[in-house]
Each structure stands twice: as structure tokens, then as C-alpha cells.
Length: 168
Image (cartoon, rainbow, N blue to C red; front, side):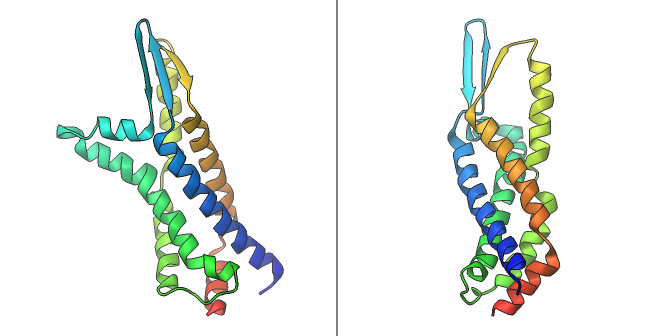
């Protein structure tokens, strides 16, 4: 395996680890703060999910949790599991090929960027009704979307499969 391929796999694993840490911060840091007259409310992503967690809104809460947080998190963790040993020259972990295959399968279903587009549309609509302050979780989530897009440019399936199969 050439140095370029090894470096790309290492970058992919390190970006996945970075995204895992950033997703953990997004959960609890304030995402948006709304102010309208006497009303003042700051909400994190987990607050939004919990806010929809009763009655008929439970499916929406589960969908938000799955598509925005759990699927991207699962994908990042699967990439780390499958390719982490490759980057440090260790033997593959059990079921590494299955983990990489599942990470490829989850790619179209991890919809963080769609969430950000939806938030942007909502912000435009809410701007006339309230004062909106964007919290640190919003910017971290935007960074995750950018890092994820960059990570996808490094994901040549052939190179990753070759790295994995040549490793062990």
C-alpha cells in the first residue's frame, strides 16, 4: 500500500473520531436561543428531541434522533472500528469487513446536512417573529457537515476495501 492510501485512511479515521467528539458536544450545548418580548428560550438538540417525545410526536422524535444523530454517529464509529487498526498497522478486528460495508450502506441515510438546510429555512421564517441567537452547537453541527463532506471525498471504496483486505 502506498503512502498516499495510508494517509487517506488515517485522515478518514481521524475525521471520524473528530466527528464523534463534535456530535457529543452538539447534543448538550445550546443550538438556538429565541427571544420574543418577555419570552426567552435556549434549546439544545437533545431538548428538541425530548420536546417531541410524547403522544403522536414520538415517531418524529425517533426520526430526528435516528437521522440526525444516531446514523451519522453509527457510521463514524463503524469507520473507526473497521479502519482504525489499518492506520496503526494492527490486524483487523472481527467483522471489520461487515462494519465497513454497513458504514457504506448508512451513508445516504445520515442526514445532518438536510437538517442544517431545514434549520436555515426555519431561521428565515422565524426571523420576523423573534430575535434569534445561534448557539455553539449550531456552528459545531455546521462544522460536522463540512468535515463529513471532506471525509466523503477521501472515501474511495476500492481504496478502503484494498486497505482492509491487505491488512489482515
